[in-house]
Length: 179
Image (cartoon, rainbow, N blue to C red):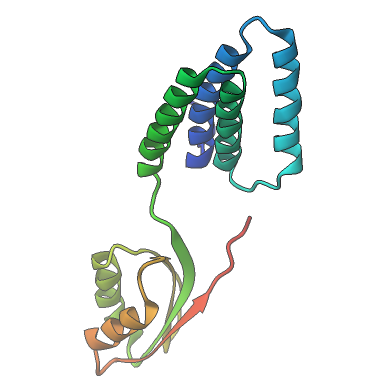
């Protein structure tokens, strides 16, 4: 309570890093030389690789930990850590929302006010996230997040068929994601 909203990749990375940390500690044991070697290798991975998704950094460090366990002859730990991390990644990624792409949907109509409820019902029925951005006497503008596996041309056909006497044109403008 009172903390800022966390993004899913950050939460997933924290979970992965907790597991990686425990594997690394098991590999290090009481060896100071191994500890310095791991710090050096982890620093190379972290600062030499351009990583946008924090979860990718966790995956890279987990493969490093498994490699270190293998390198020092801890075969059972390496096998267990590999299976455990793969299972953990599978579970963690199953909670991720489906990837979507943002679009600006422009619908020209003779009577946009009459088309709006039908259009919004259609967008909701297709499980699309949408937000009305602008209205005029000829157009409705929506920001719509479309799953990567949905095709906009099929959606356009459906939109025109909702009210063929009213909807005259449908245009999808691809929006760039802000980083």
